[in-house]
Length: 197
Image (cartoon, rainbow, N blue to C red; front, top):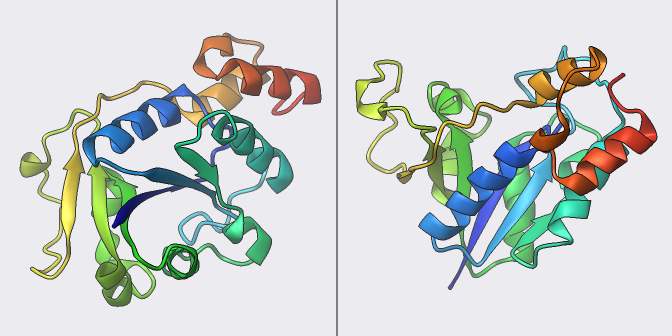
């Protein structure tokens, strides 16, 4: 049985931190593939104003996944033009990989509200949740809810990478340093299209 990792996010833009986390995810979970899923509208960020087009965000992800046979870019959420509920995305991936084990990567901040996600009970039957700890001790986090014995939960031992998309966007806007926070191909794309300025 293949093991498929699912890595969703706004990727606005995708940066080296995402790629490092993906590398840890692939190796530690012994995955056969990671599917990157750029969101259309996050249920938790419905008021967020988009700074670049969905096509640009998707293109930046795809130019990196095309360079690595372990990775794939899935535009299901962007093409749906609706709120990006993870449950619907997982159902779509399951139809394409029917005999695979699905591992969903989430952040520690997601874990705190996981039981409030859309169709959480159904979603938890379809995936194993893999929590990126980013160097934090989860056992000392009192905000982690009780999810029930049926929920499959594992943890990713990954470093805390001090790079964020918002930090990069701010650096671009203020003519600050950001080149080495991005893969060279993404850096050239951002520069050529004058994104985030």
